[in-house]
Image (tube, rainbow, N blue to C red):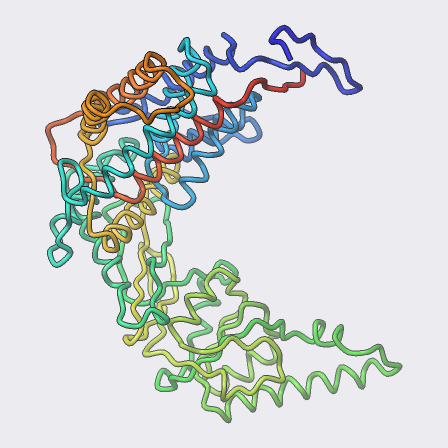
Length: 501
């Protein structure tokens, strides 16, 4: 199929077969790359993102927000493909989204502007990526790969400070960065237990608006928000609670007369059926009392009659907790979640050291502890609603960076040092080691692609270069390299974009 393909008319509109090497695509890539580049690095500037379907205005420099903005306004399939690949990287690694996007765009731009057929450019890019991966793997302690002594906290604090420095929209002072780094590290280390079955890898995270970031708080144990409870009703639930009762029951059952009635076969005598249900609920309450249950936590609703009965018997009852916290509750209580009323309560019992109502900046939370389970919680504050997305992104990126570094016990040098080193390494390596014979490309074509690849690395490295010693998460950064190069190679193997006007 030639590149001069005419548009095809269909019932919906005009479908165009647009060649990959088009000035329109090059212009769009250049525009997005320039915009993202100004939000990347130590001198990054924030962007104002306005959503068409609402009046919300977000001020941000983080990749998650900027990528969402690109997806919401872009109709180009190639741009969407690149952006979606970067977002997939972020879902697993939480950081280096801008680096991944910028490297990918740069490689595609250079590949499209090269005289080398794009299919060959794609092959050479993947070969260069493999050369980098082999080198980094074989040199676990080298020029840019640094081992981390996890018996000391300073390297991990340096790692966290590097993440925080890269998020300018948060406007963190040096004091704020130091405090957050120490708090985040404490929270992650507090989740490390001797038994992996009883360990929650991530701290429980909550985000609070209207308070300065310095008012963020750390807790041992699990912190729950109770959005369906008013402040007064939550305080009332803790009245008459016998804290000496440690047995805890977790439930995922809707225990209301209506829901139980719907489970029964239709009968002629509705009042008799309802009477039976009410008696059944009362008997179930007595069973909980019999097993010395002190706390009932239900993902779904519990009727007022059962709540009152249990509260009279000094049992704390909290319902409509939601599905997300149940994993944490199962871990911290070591109990089995009751899925139906016929389950043996004795086999489902868990326990807590304590459960209490606490306030963070005036907002109530439920605080649960079990000292035999490694879990921590953070309530992170932001005084500026517009940068809340940046705060969430930054905290998750920071926690992931520490977790991955504890596993790999190595980091990459940041501040552009890795990119500049790898660029020079590739040039030195292929000046003495020619590509394998039988390849589809000529030496001239290979050298053009190598030059473009190294040029992309140099641009990014120089853009963020500082004299500071900054560390990057090894796993997250290497995965960003892989996604960027493989996505660029995949795009360059495409011959046409199919678009609809």
